[in-house]
Amino acid sequence: MKLIMAVIQDKDSNRLSDALVEKEFQATKLASTGGFLKAGNTTFMIGVKDAEVDKALEIIKENCESREQLVAPISPMGGNADSYVPYPVEVQVGGATVFILPVEQFEKF
Image (cartoon, rainbow, N blue to C red; front, side):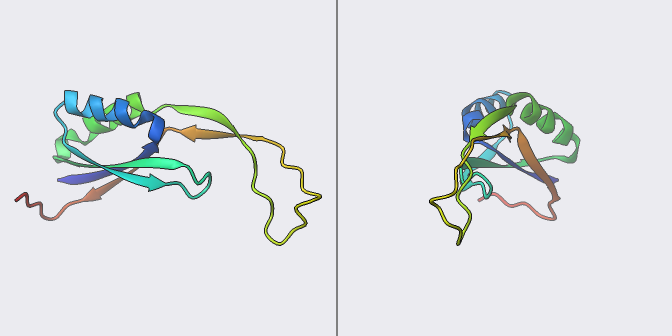
């Protein structure tokens, strides 16, 4: 058995949740916050049999798209904010960061 932990952008959360339910995967959704953009993320914890890992990964891949987004950089710490002109920077957001962990034991009460 494996535990799939997928960190995705909030925009993709409902679409992924619906797709997992449709394919009969059970998941727990957790609210999380990204460190770089300080934006809301959703972390899915999905317990699957070893043989179902590829199927679950395909569902995640199909429903979590990567996209470009303009963000204003934060002023440097300790610098003079008056002379700092924040130009928007285009960064890639979305997609999914996925961790697959072995599970020694699983109990459901």
